[in-house]
Length: 403
Image 1 (cartoon, rainbow, N blue to C red):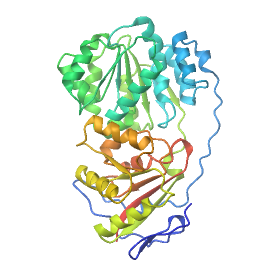
Image 2: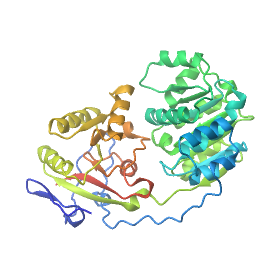
Image 3: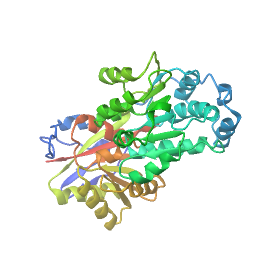
Image 4: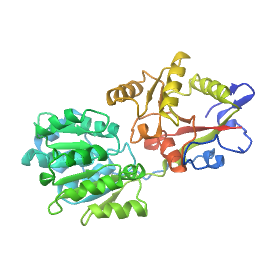
């Protein structure tokens, strides 16, 4: 992978050829932080992604979608469905409940939006579709996909997420949108205020269920689903993983579901992982700058532990000549979307983020993930490094460990 050596003082990181001593301890931790054996941050023997090629049985034209919807797909260049789309779309069009297991970035959003749009164009019932997502960013991404596929169909959406004006969202809901897309906490609030009307909601989508449960939204989701009609409701659930706990919770919401699984191998198997030693804070920042100045670090997400720390680090990188932007809980939604857009367009080389702010992000071609501050748990570590090595590509994850 790398031949160069990155030095900070007497400490050196050299990519695949580095020879570090086994770390003796982590970098300290915050409240409720688990101690993670630093050896778990090392995996230099990565496996190539071997995947049996899936041959689609359909083209989009085979699904017999409405002409206006097919025209939008043609305009967007959609010809051959991805595996999750190929299997899930016919089931959803037939009205079945679906549990879809697929890695992020495999086209699952279209897998549920296309059948929904096909039905909505005929029924046109206001607030009849509810899509629940774990993060503001994912909700915005789903809405952008909806607008792309729904051109000319006169179907409208409302995005209801925290961190934005609830009064504005209430006004949008009073205009009777057909689809409501939101995060659990804000949706629960709007149901409580009587602005969201559950009686018409005959289609429910729970996207990235595993992330919603990881983030502690299970009680909010249960509260929301209890408000919706049980009879005649179609429920579509999508998740990257399906542990026993997740499966048990999903089955509370679905009726006689079809389970569709097109997951590839776990992302961390083909992500090169290593640790980077540092002595103190000054040394730590020096090493980070040396890494980021190397041309091999093309598109990098740097994870920090706190909102203030992430903001300070982003500003420090920018003042040192590294184009960087930050997302964290103190940013407004518009600021976060602007930062993400800058990173996605390669205007910023580095995105500095907290764990919660980065949940649900699907950013292609991230070359490196750097854990500048160690994660709270090992599950958080797996989530972080999964931002690279997506869709079968290789990736690199580096974790800073104090000597």
